[in-house]
Length: 192
Image (tube, rainbow, N blue to C red):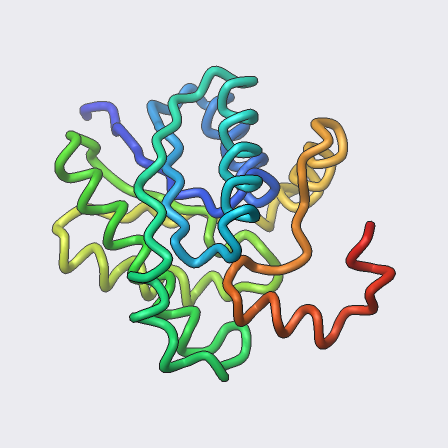
């Protein structure tokens, strides 16, 4: 069986670190892709991107950044701005990002795409996988489902965040999740 050449979509280093370490330890052939037009504001996007690059450099993992296209994301998601986390907006967001990464994978000889979009406890892994399967059908690129919470992965992730002193954000990334976090999180907690 030929070796897979996987493109791993990462939303941020804290969500990706344990999965990246596992793939590296398994000697998988993979590249980390950063396509997150949902992240707002641009300074936050750059902070998360730079932290992901730092982690990849530290572990000698190939890294690719796709264009930052907040207008594309906003056009797709703004109709669902009042949806809660795990609502329709998240499905639209996941599919948009996964489809773009799958198109890139197809154009650059990757054999499959995986993601860590469902690693956070604030996200629904089944929702991510459903969006990924829709994007896979549209692009004809296989999607590899990754479980990043069970079997010790959550604890490994928390340990790596602490060990590597990874920047750990206080909201998912989009302007709507930021507004929701500000409404529901005491200011003193946001300053940690």
